[in-house]
Length: 545
View 1: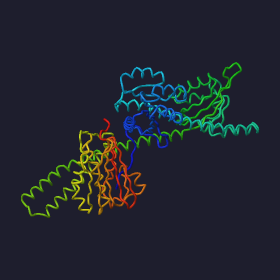
View 2: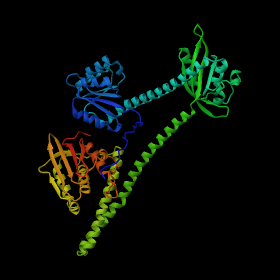
View 3: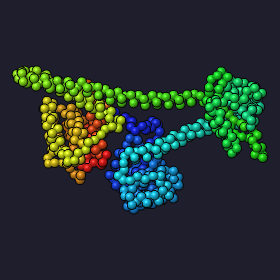
View 4: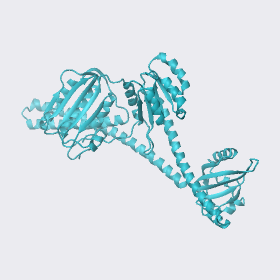
């Protein structure tokens, strides 16, 4: 098995399955700054678009909508302030896009302050503090997503309204070609209630659809025995009356959704579309409109919200369970490992010839180490998914020596599966890294190679070039197809049956997260039957966390 299943991003922001991706534009002429910004924003599951100049940013802004623009002030060619000014001048439709300036020197702050006239909403000092950046970005991302959600809902509602109005128009045209009797029959069979009422909301005319909608007859409404306003839910009365007053005062049609209480005591959601009919002097004469039952739609929306809430809770409980389970599994492992060690020491001191017992104890210790490794992998997976993976960076860590040490530890295992280890790690390759996490990555890759390349040589090579360390681990085993390669670094993903290859499918997932946390990258090249080559590239001086 080579990896695990991808999961949603952390940070409390989850996008709907069919919602468009939220895009953020990063503008900076320094690639390292762009990489750092992109890494800081990774928890938000954003579509990150990067530009290396003001000219490129203007071109991108012409064709795409962004939730936020993060722009460096000082750039060659068009600087940030001039780019913002040109954007506001030549692309007025993008004036709503929030702009945050990034400044690397205090002397630029005066220019940034003047830059608020170009539409900037804030600025940050470089190097950017990740939590401050995420706090500011979260506000604009959430606002953008809420705005886009409202826009989609309005579009859906407008489409529904258009369809209903189109249906009403066709029915009205047909009714005009027939007698008043045909018109009345048509009105009475509408999937809702058509009405005409006076400005005081007493009905002058109402279709028989009111009976199915409210439980009251048309005669009861027209006679005044029952007023429509009496049916409104108490919590909606003020909102509906205010909307009606504003719409008819401005000569606009009214579209509103609210609840009514039926004769049977139930509650229904109603979609109400009405228009004012005015005297020549502008005074309101009648209100004509249509009301329809949308209770099913509202119920579906509430059910969807309930399911989303339950899903989020299920994900939270799963992560909590994995964390608790990992800790609980480790609790008995530590004393068990200690007792096995003491037992082995006792055997060596008192029974030096008990070779079978020594083998059994060593096998048991190997299983404890394996179970400890699996438990640590589960614990790391929960830390990663909850954003709690931490690094302890040290100066002058020698990657070449680390690789040689890990390979030495695996010599016995490699010999057992008949896999010669070929190590090319001459000299010293120094960097600022987390020793334990880096050792974990090398261990995972080498263990993976021995598992899938048993019986053939495994090659490890470490080189340095242009401030980057490059580690390759190549096996000559079963390899993998394109489908497996696409998901090999996911969490709990299995490319082959776990009946033949053990493990939790977390090693490559954790390795990828550690490498990326160190500012690096990892990828794989492989074909079925031709082995696999995993490549890790790390900056010798990773960005500050």
